[in-house]
Structures are given as C-alpha cells and as structure tokens.
Length: 225
Length: 288
Image 1 (cartoon, helix red, strand yellow):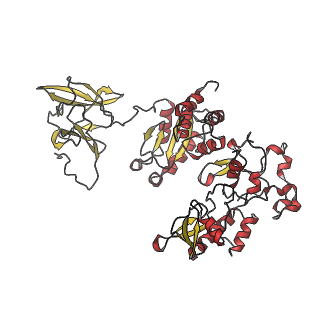
Image 2 (cartoon, each protein chain N blue to C red; image 1 turned 90 degrees about the vertical axis):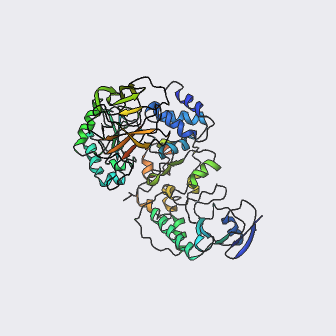
Image 3 (cartoon, chains in turn green, purple; image 1 turned 180 degrees about the vertical axis):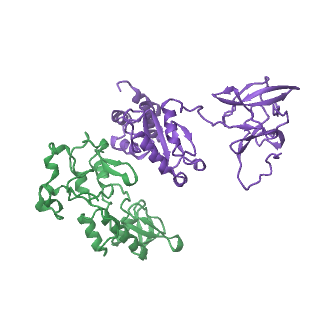
C-alpha cells in the first residue's frame, strides 16, 4: 500500500494505482478527455495535468499515467495547473471547435474564447479509437500514421482494412468527432453543421467501404482554411 | 514479389528487439521503397499488426512508400545551409528536375528530397547525390551536378573518404601524382626511408583510406622515415603519434589543413587538422 498526499489529504492506495484514480477516490475532480476506463492510459490530451513536488522541483505531470508514489504531494487545482489546463482547452478548442465534449469542458473551465488559428473538425489525436480498436475490439484496424503535423489516424494505406469489422467502436469512443456520422439523421445532430450540407458520403457508391468517420473525413465537407 | 525475400529478411531478424526497423530497412534496400505488398507480408511474417508497421514506416523519413528514382538527390535545408542560400539551391533543383521535393521525375531517374541537416554545416549549402556530397553548392553548379549524375559520373569514387590535395610543407610543391592513381584519384607521392634505402611510395589521397602501393616490403609495426620526394627534406618533426608513440610526418593540405601520417607501418594514428583562422596551433609545422 502506498500513502500519498493529494491537496493536503492523505490517501492510501494499492501499488500501481495512478494519481488520477487516487484523486477520484478522494473526490477531487480532474477533467479527462483521452482517458477511458478499460483502455490503457495514454496521456495524449494532457487535460488531466496535476502538479507534483514542491518549490522549484514542482512539475506538471499527466495524472492518468503517473503512478502513485509513497509520500508524493499532489495538487490538482493549483494556479499553475489551472493555467495549463485552460491553455490546453484553448488549443483543443482551436483544433476541434465543433466537439460538444470539448465545448462543455471549456465552458466548465471558463474558457470562452481561444486565440489560435481556428481549424475545423480536426482530429485531436487522443488515440482513444486506436486503443479501443486494439484493446476492446481486438482488431487493430486503425493506427497512427506519420508524425508531427502530418500525424493522423486511419487505416494502413488509406484503404478499407480487412481486419475492420465495422463495429463502430472507434466512432463511439471518439470525444471530439462523435458527431461526425450523424449526418444521415440530421435531426439528431447537435452542431447542425452538416444539416445544411448534402451528405457527401451518400453520393459515393459503396458507402460501407468508405470508413468516412476516419481521416480523411469529409462528413461535414467544411473545408479547412 | 513471388519469391520469399520478405520472409527471409524477417527470419533473420526474428527475436531481436527493435527488429522492425532493420526489417523495413532491408526490405527498402531490396526494392528501393516499401511496397504495400511487402509490408503486408512483413505483418503476416512477424505477427505485428499492419497498422503498427504502417505507423513505423510513415513515421521515419528514411522509409519511402513511393517508388524512388535511380538517383536520390538530397538538398540540405538545415539552419547553416539555409542562411547560406540553400532554399535557392532547392528551388534550382526543383526547376531543373521539374518536380517538387519528395517527388520523382517521370523518367524515374531522380528523386528529390529535402533534409533538415546532414551534419556538414561548415560545408554548406550541401547537396548529396547518391551518397556523394557536394559542398558549397552555388546556383550555377546545380545543372552541372545533375548532368554529371545523369552521365554516371557522379558515382561515388570511393565508399568512404574524400580526396585531399597534398603539398610538401617545406618546398610547397604538390606531392600529387596523377600517373599513379589509387581508387581513381591521384595518389600522394612520398619517399620512404627504410633499412638504409630510399624508395618512392604512393599513398591513397582519399582521407580515411590508408591504401598504399609501391615502396619496399615493410613488416607491420616497423618505423620508417618519410621525406618529400622533391626537396628530399624529412617530413617528420618532434610530434609523436598519439596512438603508438612513433614520429609523425606532416604534410600540408591545400584545402586548408595539416595531415599527419604516422611513420609506423600499419598504425592509423594520423589525422587531419583543419586550419582555424586566428588560432595558432603550437604544434603546426613551421611555415618557411
């Protein structure tokens, strides 16, 4: 058993517990985006940052991947953490302004505008779909490709994968683009972005093979600047 | 791709951690790029998912999923090359080849790519064609480089090493002997004094090669005297080899350096010291 201190409260957890789990046990809210129970922690979205250590040695770490250590001092809502979280939300908002999940998170953290170049319906590369496909669906049909600003998620060679069973799990877990495929039922769409456009995927014949919910997604046909 | 090439490559690397990079490198060496079919075979043979392999193959710049041309032209756009006008060189290459970086010419002769640093910053702007490095490239030289490459003259003259032009530090005459080329470049002519006799020896002028022809049969490990064949003055001074402690002979390199050669047969203790303006090295030969 390991005893650590979160926001001044001591908590004893089992070895291997993450800081995020320990904080949740105490009831301290930490926003998460890429984290999902049942999937390997990945630490991609950085939203769950907390501050550990003291003085000049203090640093920000992602609580979803940081294992609890004996005597660890964690602050989940220090000024530095809040500042970092707001910045991360602004960046996420710039990448994917249509996401209801991100909009909700932003308003909850009092981020009402963002200062970066606006992109439209861009994948935030949180990797949830990749892990879902691999760990829960045992398919590994999609993965990360490229690197840096060319990093994207999709099937190898951009062709329909033979191991994909079209289970839709990737769409289901996507925190950013879960609205992408509601174009067939525009009345259900929250953003309504695609209701004003003709669904482009339907015009292309075998729709089942399009995998249009993945990159390059044309679901909403909003041109990137 | 009907043979078992891919399977053989995979079998060689099975079990080694990080084998994927080696496997992909070898597959690329075999085909010149990574064909889709080959990657699918690698996936089957290694048991790694195709999505992961594709991720690795697209992550590294060294791998290409598109067929490459016969000649690979890499223009350095690193910081040092950039400030010396590398973007203009890259534009010139694009103009001459009629392609953009990352593309291959229609006749499948050239693939042009830009790289971010080749580590030869002092020589910039650098263009590397088929492993052969062209330094201080100017706009006007681009056409000539491509012409030479197309004509097959750009083949690397040696696997490693670049040719040096050597002068005697005393009489300042050239020691290059075009009549005795070693590995296609004029050799360095030296007089070797051993066992009381003086004979002429030819040394490869490719830096880092150490190939010798002519001269007496000298057992490895014995120390010889080296002299200028023209002014007959001894080339050694009081410097000693850091490797074996024997005397070092010094010659001037016209490009602006001093080359030291160990007088012990078989010792590789010699080195190339670049002249650095403003720094008067104490152990440099006296300039007479």
